[in-house]
Structures are given as C-alpha cells and as structure tokens.
Image 1 (tube, rainbow, N blue to C red):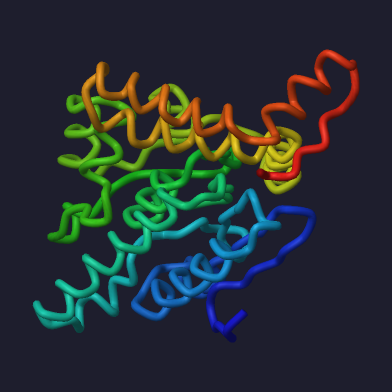
Image 2 (cartoon, one colour; image 1 turned 90 degrees about the vertical axis):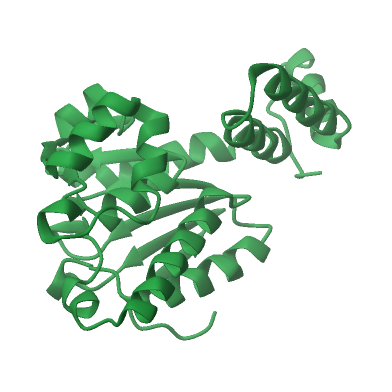
Length: 261
C-alpha cells in the first residue's frame, strides 16, 4: 500500500482496520487525510481477501472531530469547492464499497466525523462518544452528506433540529434516534467491532454484498422498483456456488465453506 502519513491500515483475517491518526487535532480531516482515505479504499476495494473494514480514530479522545477548521479558514472559495466535493466523493466511495464498513466511534464524532460515520454501514459507539453536526455554529453547514444521510436515518424533523441548532448529542441519545446501532464500554469497542466483523465473515460473501446493494440502492427509489431490485440481486446471488454450498451445509448439518463465488 502507498505510504501514508495520517491513515494507518492493519489487515488480518479478512478484516482491514483503518485508523485516522491525527490525535493532536482530534483526527480532524484535511485535504491530505481525504487523499489518504481515498487511496486506502482504492487499494482495499481490489483485495478480495478483505470483506469487512473497521474505521476508527487514533488516540483516546476522538473518532473524527470534524473537518480541519484551521485549514478551512485559509481556503479560497475555489479550494472550498474542491474540498466539499472531494469529501463527498470519498464518503460515497466508503458507502458504496463492496466491503461491509463498520464505524468504531471511540470519542468525539462531530461535523465531518458524524458524516463519516453515517457513510458507514454499521455504527458501534463507545460509551464515551459524542456526536453532532455543529457546523452552523461556526458559519458553515454539513456538506459531506450530513443533510442527506441523516434525514434517511432519523427523518426530516429530527435532522433539521440537529442541523439547525448544531447541538451535540450523547451517545445514548444517538442510540435512541437510531444513529448508532450499539453502545459498548470504551475498552471493549474494538473487540466488539472485530466480533461483529467475524460474525459477518462467517456468512456468504456474495449474499452479504448483494444484500448491501439491495438495501443501499432500494432505499433511494420507490417500493415497487426496490422490490424489483431486491429480486434481481436475489437472483444474482441464487446463481452462485456459495448459495449451493450454504443450502447443502444446512441440510448436512455442517459449517459452510464459502468461496465468494
């Protein structure tokens, strides 16, 4: 993998753990971090051995505390335009990855940090985590999908309140709203995410990726069209060797040996 400065990657047993590592600025995202995230995902996307990605933040305080405010203060309008579109591109790449992506929210996830978490498939949070979209408090507003992905999770009313006030919310409120899937003790966060990843790895790779496609794409279209999409994805999966292996293993009362084809 190409040498990077702020985005560390550890790979093992079908799982890639990505750590955004700028703890001195609470892992704030600037242009360089975006470039490194994109490079990292481009490499991971091509590695068929990796099926689950866990994203977390370096240090003990933050997942990602947002975009780098100092860097944004110095940007021209043209540079700001490039920054917002680059952020959207990278987060969409994460959302549409052919891997399952888990956000391990280990602390502050504010602004771009919440937006990064929203782009992941599953969000597991430490009991020390805090989330929010406080951009309006500093003369900005969410531009990396915060006004769009949040609505799809919690509805317009709640999304508008959180965006318009910029209010930080506790991890428990985030759980009640459906923003995070699960809260775990801080020192058990990574082990819980690995355990979740391993439970996903035990299943058919083709079935998992087709179900992700059906959920992601189906939620953006009418129910009738979504049902057609679901059936198409189901038939793609039905034509695989893994489908035959899964059914055979069940009937023969043994563990399946999935090959991802």
